[in-house]
Image 1 (cartoon, rainbow, N blue to C red):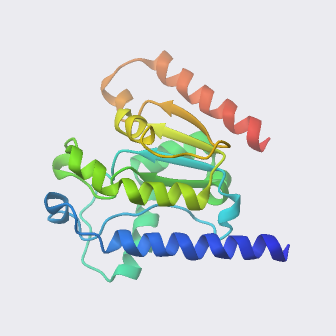
Image 2 (image 1 turned 90 degrees about the vertical axis):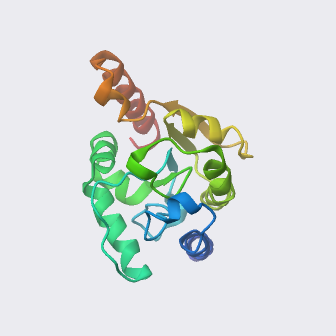
Length: 200
């Protein structure tokens, strides 16, 4: 137990250092102008050794205007808002609250929102790639689920350990304009089947 606790502590120290570096990042001028802080990642447990699934999408959406606040308050604010936003509700429906709270690490290839949620330019994807590599190296998940083409393409540029299984899926927003309920339900079922293999 002590060995596992020490490993989890090491993971936590590393992921908090990555988080700090992301929050201080000013590489993308266009994005810095609309984001009070970059939004590093979402997880709800301190037992990072148990985070078996990493979900990766494109970049954070802006559903609500973020008030001015200190950096440490922003981290908790972001986690609370994510849990209730569209993407958070989608994942809660897929995985359930228990798995979300204990086993999933959620991040994006780019840590900042884009103006009006428009596509990222290539440099903005490249600028964040080192952070994504560090997150994956530290968490070392058993599964990576990408959502959307940008995440699918960027993960190909990452050096992954052999034990990590990668699955690519449509982003939830795709189904809001692509009226294909069969495809939507098939994706949902495939993800739930993968989860059942691991956790049930």
